[in-house]
Image (spheres, rainbow, N blue to C red):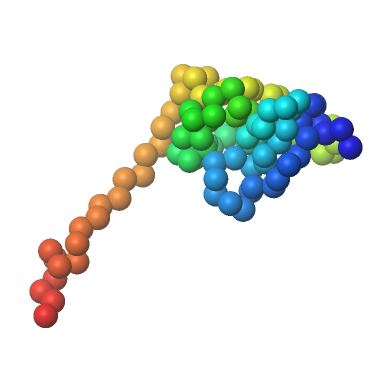
Length: 111
């Protein structure tokens, strides 16, 4: 009741592939909330879809980092970044996995 840190859950979107985990409400605003858990020396991975939605939603996109500090989960430390796109782009490195696509008809003789 009353939400967490001012966020009230409206919808769990983790299975939707929509670029964020939870649709929340803060006051009158709907917010897209993405959650990333990490270890102190770990990394987070942000998908191209998450970056796209962060760019589109700007101030209405929030990244929550949860530090697994080897304590019980209720003692993990949380961090909240509103509109994290610029920080992600300036601090992160892209890992691009290109793929080659070619029409089968161009390679194989089909009748």
